[in-house]
Amino acid sequence: MNTKVIELELKIFLMRNIMSSEALEDISKLIDRSLLKTQKYADFHKKNKYKYYTFCSLWPLEANKIYKKGNIYSIKIRTVHEELAEHFEEYLVNEYTDSMKALTINKRYLPKKHIGKIYNITPSIAKFEDGYWRENQSLETYERRIKDNIIKKYNDFFNTKIDEDFELFNMIKFENIKPISTKYKNISLLGDKMTLYITENEMAQEMAYFILGTGLLEMGSRGFGYCNYKWI
Image (cartoon, rainbow, N blue to C red; front, side, top):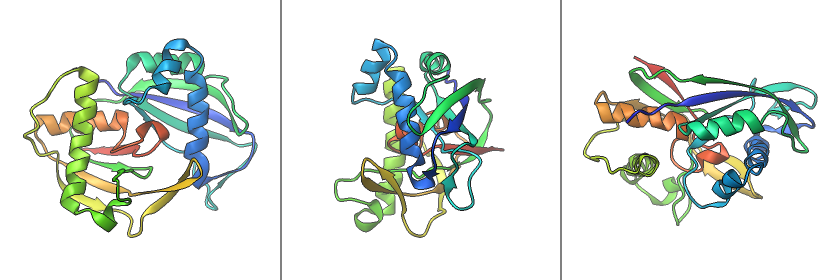
């Protein structure tokens, strides 16, 4: 498949102080407002389906974990959906909420090179019915969820059904000892930061690249599971 990961760098002006634990939700509100500008993407936003985009938190980081009113920060949004990227280019600029105002946006395509590893910058979320996975699930179950999740997104996006008999990664390294808590809709979601060492087979490389545009595990369109990468 001809996957293209598009990266949009959005500059924003902060209208009030924001705690780092609340930043993803505030960015989500800004992006959601831009989606409501057309009927097509308002419907897209409201449907319970994969959204094929993800984003990171504000940059640069603040040492005291409070983003400052009056400062300008960057947000990177990634997607595999070219038409959606065009929508963001047109409608995100000059969008605003009570906490931030969008200023400028720039687009580039992530090069498709051999990926050695990917690692998530924002916590990844795996929603199990019995809560946070480490308390009730095995590592094997969690690793299977990672692979199953991206295959489902990929099949849905390309309207296909790929051969699932491949190894996506040969090692996983968790960067957190305790779960990472992030505020979302008046609750705290528990997630993880990890590094996946990607295997060299063609399908694993394709899936890893797709993860860069859609997020690792769930709630990518709320900013969770945004990954960076290291090429070989």
